[in-house]
Amino acid sequence: MNILQNRIALHTWTIDTTPLADALRVANEAGYNAVELRHVDFLRGRKAGLSEEAMVKQVRDARIKVAVIGTESGVIFETGDELKRKLDSLRYVCEKCMALDCGVIMVAPGQHAEGGMNLAIRNFKTCAEICGEHGVKIAVEFNSRHPLIRTLENGMELVDAVNMKNAGLLLDTYHLHCSGGNGASFRNVPVEKIFTFQFSDAPPGPPSDSRQPVDRLPPGKGAAPFVEIFKTLMALNYQGYMSYEAPNPAQWNRPAGEVAREGVELVRALLARAEQASDAA
Image (cartoon, rainbow, N blue to C red; front, side):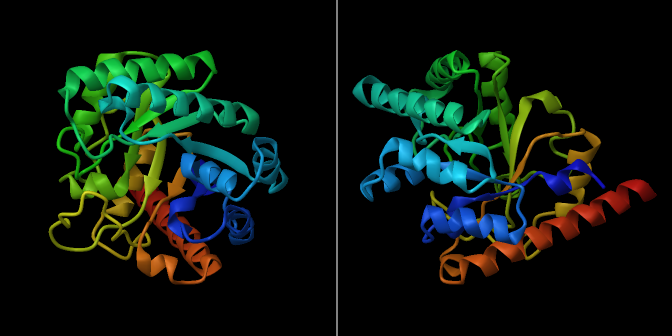
């Protein structure tokens, strides 16, 4: 059995309307190996009156691996006071990683691109330096709706320019497909630069115009070439986690346990098909 069968995480955005304590329980009951948390999960806990210690204890007591924690998006295009605030937020997430034995932080490019690639390189390097002080890796996600960091090539341009061992890439099946990629698009990416992986499917037809797409589908229910993507991932001998990130109001209106079980069962079936296809080749 390929190692990826035992490296599947549930992203809390997939069941966004579910309180964190329940989301952790659901992930365990559905058979996930880990979870991917977000900065907002801790903000919500704080608003609910939990102390920092209580939030960490809540996650630890769930007895499930924390594979990745997301920091606030858009930091790589910020300047001035807002850059300082988001870098402080990144330090906060680093502290949560250390407390929860999590080695990877992810960052999304946000909604704007003022300052261009030069600013993104400068800020992403600063982020990597901060993470390095805490012994943590940081992975940048390319977003098919972003004006600048919207393709695999754009993401790797940023990672290569920063050129730090703890600065790498988040690969997402939805954004790979919606940006025009295919199952073999990332075959030449050094696997040591793929720090983490997210999966969800994309509806057939042209991508929506939304800058914050929440039309993602369970794996195998849309147009993304999952078997070919997983064959490439296996050929690279990727050793990291795979997070089921499928934000969609239709998902949020279903029972969280049902959503979680469907995702993990579908992806394990697709991984098995990809392994069989690889063995037959």
